[in-house]
Image (tube, rainbow, N blue to C red; front, side):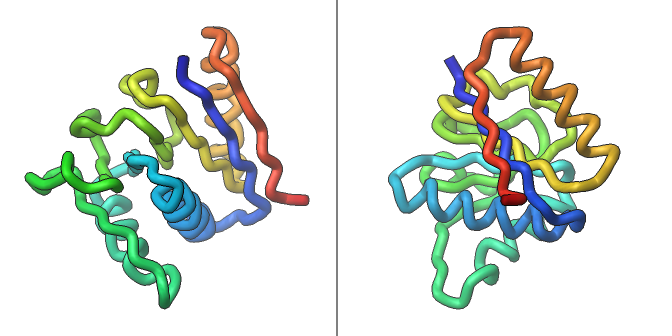
Length: 143
């Protein structure tokens, strides 16, 4: 059964959420995991594509946008719809809802930043997972 981790950030800017997603992606990739990043839309996916190359001067994370034909052969893929290739290890969800395909992954990371509408959506997501019996972990990054 999928394990779901909620990372609660102190920041109120979405850019901090994306930078945290980059760091989380790098950590998972370095541990040998395949990562699928579920972006909110195409613009966010393209921005994250650029950010993964630039968020740290010495970082290198091989990745592709999901519409590339090599997506299944790379450890990190970024998508913005329900197609996630053959990835099934780790999903980092940047949407404000639970994607339909979340249960195919071993782990799901939900990144929460301090914006009232998103906080309410993520509270609903927590209840969604909890009511279905998924293992939930809360990581409060505000401390």
